[in-house]
Image (spheres, rainbow, N blue to C red):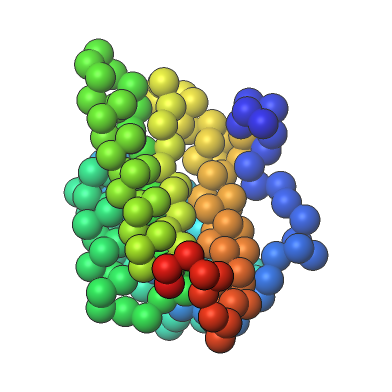
Length: 172
């Protein structure tokens, strides 16, 4: 469903697992900080609302969206995390830079999640305009950071649910 038809901050709280025993990484791009920092606020508020402990949340800032996967890899190599939430914003401009950055970041985060077995949540806004970004970072469409936090909690629960199990016969 398109964001224009949905408030990203509305969800069924009864379906969200507790974060009290989880360790969550958050990587925030500083570029477009007037967008990314409100996304971060949405993530943090949501995690705390669902019992996350501040000492179990590892936050790093990077210059821009392109650096999100590298920082995620560094976090995964140095911290035992249940999920990593990556936040950034690349607004369409006069060139195709947004296409290359967005696709690169999406592919890299997907691969990191698959290879590491730790969910790497794509909280990168890819709007056509600054107004669309603001609408999704606490504006009229809610806050995509809330959605990213809920996704992280649900995926961490899924990961931990099968933690003690054996691979499903697909080479793991």
